[in-house]
Amino acid sequence: MRAELDQPGSAPAADYQGSKSIAGPRAVLSRLDVIAIIVGLVIGAGIFRAPSIVAANVGSEGVLLAAWLLGGLVSLAGALCYAELASAYPHTGGEYHFLTRAYGKRLAFLFAWSRLAVLQTGSIALLGFVLGDYLSALLPLGEFGAALYAAAAVVALTALNILGLRTSTGVHRVMTLLIVLGLLLVAAAGMLHTAPAPSPIASADGAGAATAFGLAMVFVLLTYGGWNEAAYVSAELRDVRQNMARVLVTAIACITLIYVLVNLAYLNVLGLEGMRGSTVVAADTMRAALGDAGAVIVTLLIVVAALTSMNVTILTGARTNYALGSDFPLFGFLAGWDGGRNAPTRALTVQGAIALLLVLVGALSRSGFETMVEYLSPVFWLFFLLTTLSLFVLRRRDAEHPRPFRVPLYPLTPLAFAATCAYMLYSSLAYTGFGALLGAAVLAAGVPLIFFLNHKPATWR
Image (cartoon, rainbow, N blue to C red):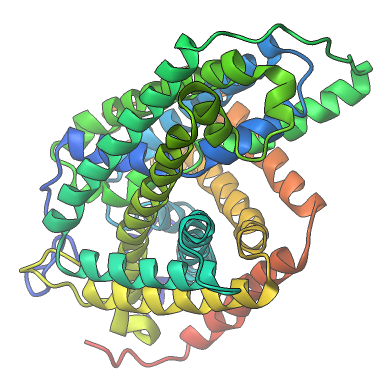
């Protein structure tokens, strides 16, 4: 294995972006493309599911809205940290590249392994089950109908990305526009509807209220999750050193505004107690405002949202897998990049196969969505925390490296976001189930591979 495997701060062994012998990613994405990627990934199924759970854990309408605003501020703090990393070290490997420079290739390999086997593939399967649940309500296919819909979506969207980046991002723009317009329709319909009379709300004691609000923030922050995926297309963003911070800040500001408006609409139509009692808060809002046709519209909107999030998760996940194959001979079969299509076709194919396997696991568990949430959450927050801490490591070790953007209020901003990541990691482990144990086991399975790689001859080139 390559000698620099243990050396933090070393660049990837195969600098595939600068290689003349291997086709690599090109800077072809505009700011609008990347903003659409972020907005489309973040505004997925969560905003149609989480608000009722958040409402059940807050004591007033004002606290509910404050929670969604706080989620935007926390996400903005994290985005500013990522903007410094991505503008200083633009690379298709994204977080994988940051972890390599900060901690060395052993930890970076474990992260890349988790992306391949847990994080991205688990997210793809999770979104597939959201899609499947709603499509099954419109057109049932039997006991495993949700899993069949999920599998079909994985196959179709993987094929779309194999056709090429331009094809994928073009469709993604249209899908993201439909989601945003649909959510604005929900907000407008809710705002114009006659508000119900407020009902009395029982107040909790101080300790109970703090615990409940903490649980509410878990769901809020999960609904904001996904903006970090911009790091994986940093090498394909035009003028990345100037544009990355603008892209992240603009995208999160838009998302926060939409989330607050939609929650205001939910409150105006259903009230806080109505939100608490609803498991399909968006559909109930539209049914009350526009009748059954409104409920059908929002159901179709959720389907589009899930497809959009799946599409961009497939796009960004395959790029980390490409980096994994470029750096480690054992996974060299992932390193193929189709220059004509500007797509990592082999990585996309393998990622799709693993996602299909996880769809099968979810189908056998009879609770696919919940199992996938448990499967990926602890691993996600562990590496989110380590990536945030890498900012401190690289500031110290690589002090002379050009940084076109520096996170404001350093070190307070990254410290605050790191503390949030640590809390989310604790929360995801405090409610472990079968899925969490499976995800931890799959992550642990990558540990012995690190030592095996030390003795693996570099045969793939």
